[in-house]
Structures are given as C-alpha cells and as structure tokens.
Length: 239
Image (cartoon, rainbow, N blue to C red):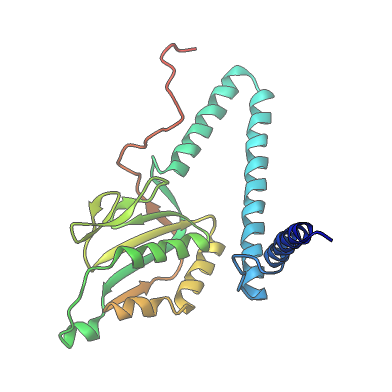
C-alpha cells in the first residue's frame, strides 16, 4: 500500500479517536459536578414544591376575583376592584398592615459591653442573612428600624453605615417587625429563630438577637418611598 495512503488513514483514525475520546469524557465527566447529598437535594425539592403550591394558590385566588368581578353588577364590581387595589397596595408595601407576627430586637450583648468589648454596627451581610431566614420561614411583611421592606429594597453599606432603602439605621439597637399569614405560622417562625444557631452569628459580632414570642397583632408601617415601574405606563386618556 502506498505510504501516503497509510499516512492519511493514520491521521484520520487519530482524529476520529480523539473526537470519540473527547465526547466520551464529556458525557462521563460533566464540567460542573453536583456535590450535594440526598438531603440537600430533598430540601431544595421541598422548597420548589412549596413555591409551586404558593403559585397555584395565588392563581386560584386571582381566578376567584376575576369570576366574582364578572358575575356582579357595576356597583359591586367597583367595590371588588377597590378591595383588590387595597390588597395589592398592602402586598406591595404602600400601606400599613396589621396582623399576627413576631418582633425581634438587635441590641449590644450586655456581658460583652460590660467587659469593654467594642460594639460594631451590624453588617449588611448579617442583616441580609437574617431577612432571608425570615422570608424562608413564612415572614410576609418586614419593617427594619422604621423602614418597610419592599421588592425594590436594598440593604447595603453606604459610607461605612448599614442602610435600608438608602436610609442609615441605628447601629446597634434595631427593632424588626414581622407579620406572617396567621398566628400559627408566627409561632413556627418564633420557634425556628429561637432554636436555631443563627443567633450565635450575632454574638460573634458582640450583638444579641432577642426573639420575642409570637403576638396576635402587630403593625408594620407603609413604605414611604417611591416605587419605580419598569413596565407599567399610566394611561392619561382615561380609557
């Protein structure tokens, strides 16, 4: 056989072999390896199912409102629409709301203060972690040191001060009001926060997280800023 033909066959065979090896390696060894154990996966699945259930409940509620609106006369429709707008304002944070919930206090750790430890202001990262835990365990409406949290709220460091909605909060004495869907969920939120090791993170920063028992009625104030609308445009024609 001609040497040129043998050389060509060898080169082609080598290229094909490399391509097959690369494809096999890609299938057998993915770039990102999932290192989560079965319990972490089950927990994530549980959270996703919970969100799915909440979405289905929301869809059912909105469908009920639409059906009620379509089946009533003009005067009743106006009242239904007014009630719906008020509910949406509450959920968006534009009006105050009262309901069952839990009150938290962040204060300097007394024993550390007496021993002369320097009390630093609460960090934005620690406050964000606390807020995420509250939302995770069914906290619906939150007010931090007089600032209502809404979907546009930001907790960040500005010029060395922790701010909520761009407003500096008290360095070491902070009251947090949380409203839940019902009193039972308020009790569950209290039990979780009280039993968790999350409070140790505050102690490491020379702070103490005081978790008060669930209350049947607390009030969260309205957001006093302006909410920006990216996709909604006001119709000035009155149509």
